[in-house]
Image (cartoon, rainbow, N blue to C red; front, side, top):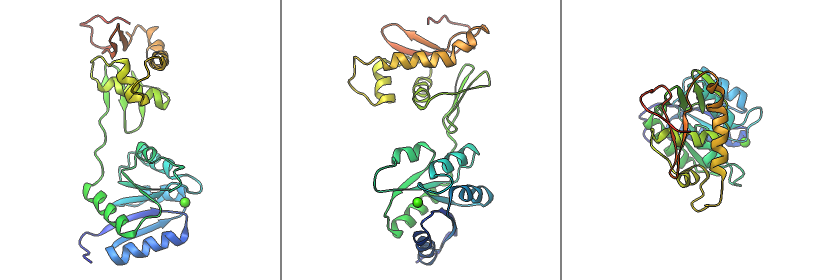
Length: 243
Ligand code: CA
């Protein structure tokens, strides 16, 4: 076995036997140095205190689950690559792990060879680039932190509202059709009778436009009759927008 690059990994896993097996196995076979923590709170603490090339996070953990640990790391602007260990019973969604800011996942039970290969790949890739903040006028959407602000004020959105706004802001001023939004945000290809888009557009307006209207700011979310919705730059006074 080659011991080329020295790799340091933090493993947060509450099954003691499995944790020690992984620790020993990676150390002996792959020259990967593994630190262990067995609950979410100490795992998060160790992750922020130490310097690791990658973090392996179990999802079901005492004190704080793996999703929360990952999310809090990202909120603290820590971009250390995270590999999540997901359970085989499918109780936890792998897509959810990636949503929470994980870079990869591995389903239990896994082989040490596969784990080592995945870790090396993650380390080679390095810490992911921080996703860019998206802007439209005074509105800022930060995909990395799942945060939205307008004029610097934080706006609390549900996950669905956030996804809808993200789809609109990524269109960069172009019209997005109702069907496209249904498809992208709800994963419905063929649901012509649904008015869920209209309902959520209303929710978004109540949070993003209504509070600022009384201060004289123009609405950002605009309806383009018969075509869909687009976001209008509220700081650009060169054009008229209909609501
Ligand atoms: Ca566990």
